[in-house]
Image 1 (tube, rainbow, N blue to C red):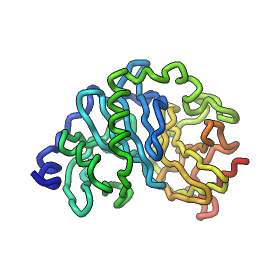
Image 2 (cartoon, helix red, strand yellow; image 1 turned 90 degrees about the horizontal axis):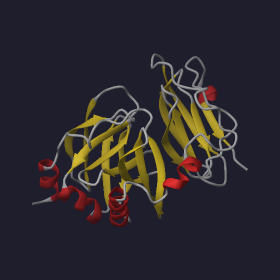
Image 3 (spheres, rainbow, N blue to C red; image 1 turned 90 degrees about the vertical axis):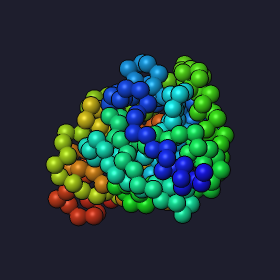
Image 4 (cartoon, one colour; image 1 turned 180 degrees about the vertical axis):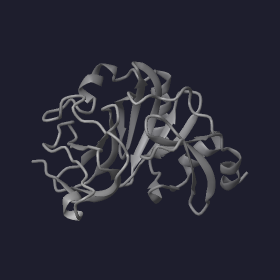
Amino acid sequence: MTIRQSLSAGIVLAALGSPLSAWADETAFEQLGRWSVTAVSNGGKFAYCSADVDNGKVQLRLATNGDTWRVGVPYYESKKKIAGYYGFGDAAEQADFKVSEEGWAFLAIDGDQLNAFRSNPSFSINLDRGLQSWKLSGAGAAIEKASACARSKGQKQAAAAASSTPGTGRDCPPAGKYRSQNSARPVTVTFFNGSKHPVEIYWIGFDGQWKKYHTLGPDKNVDQKTFATHPWVATDARGNCFREVFMPDPDGGPENNNFQVWFD
């Protein structure tokens, strides 16, 4: 069976267990080069582990609860399902991605598809942010580590969960002070990292939860579609926050929505 055939045959729309709530918590499990392995819990109960990689604009997530696997990207709109394209190399298949309550557009994958991540140089998804591609170097090791994380229910670094929780670092706003209110007035903002080190860009959701959308390298920028009442926050690698909470301005020009991050 070819990769294209296995991709087509392996589409399953079921999610990994029950949907996650907006309170899903992510804890670092291990860093493998460009890949981050993360344990995700929901209400204090283990949900899944993931192998994540970033192309400088969008995060790619391979997620497993120990039994099944999904591939997904952050998804910002309120739809429950979205049609998109995905594939390895020149292959392109259409499928319906299921949107989870934690803000990801996921597609279930089978064993053949999972092996394709180990053996192919790149993978692409075309959804709301246009065509996005990720290099898969190191994916095999990250997949194995995510499997080990799921087998242990993410317990390797459970003791460090509090210190790695987004929003608990220096200069971060008090929990619950900021949250998105509605999605009535769309606006596009630009984030620019003027620091000498990578920064993380987070959206603060409707229940005050933080959701990472981008990792920006030094002197890099990214455009992000959002709405007028939706706050955004930037942190350094230690979880310390930039002093400003960014609020989009639909009535202003590009200069009002060009958010610059400067860490010493």
